Image (tube, rainbow, N blue to C red; front, side, top):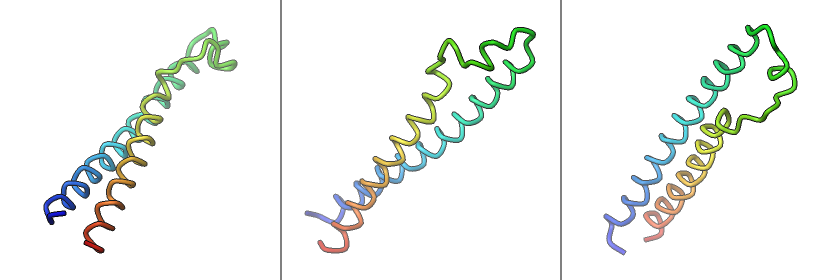
Length: 85
């Protein structure tokens, strides 16, 4: 395998890691803002019971963790191929 193929794994892995970190931080801010706005409303039933469920609030964090794990796997594979190749 040519040396440039190893750098492709490392580069794509790095992009996924950076994207994952951005999505995790963005998801935390979105979740914090959403629940802070609910706490200020007079009808706090949705805030207290978390009903109805809002999957969009945690979706950014879930996508970020998936992207982070895929990026780390790609980076480890690229590093291993570069080291042993």
